[in-house]
Image 1 (cartoon, rainbow, N blue to C red):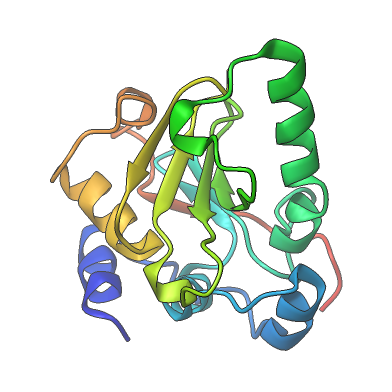
Image 2: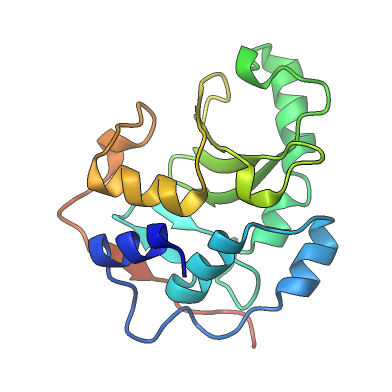
Length: 183
């Protein structure tokens, strides 16, 4: 277990029932066509699918809730983004590379997304986190793992212009979603 996950578990205790059972990581990675970061796998195993502070909704391989499946959400993610950027002409300069690949691992009720910036030839543990605003014209890039990002965000080590104002500290720190897909 990573030190970032230990820190996150201290800040936001995971559900007592754990992450909702084992995940078929090999099947998810096969469909996605790439390995996923180990810290993300540990994060999902600890928490499962659910929402942090009623805002950051963690995606995972099945079993999940409807629309909480990381594989399904990534099926057309890049195609959708590129089409919307071409229509609206608002692609962030930081994401202008031709071979851009964003893999979404969490989202928000406002349609903001938390992604990895997948860089060819680089191991998944080095992919930075990209927070993409729902208007798709603004983004923030954080050179850290997803678990480091969540721990830092919730500890207020930094503020995200996109996410921080929407975190409801009056709500449960983590709320697991009930599973709707069979195991």
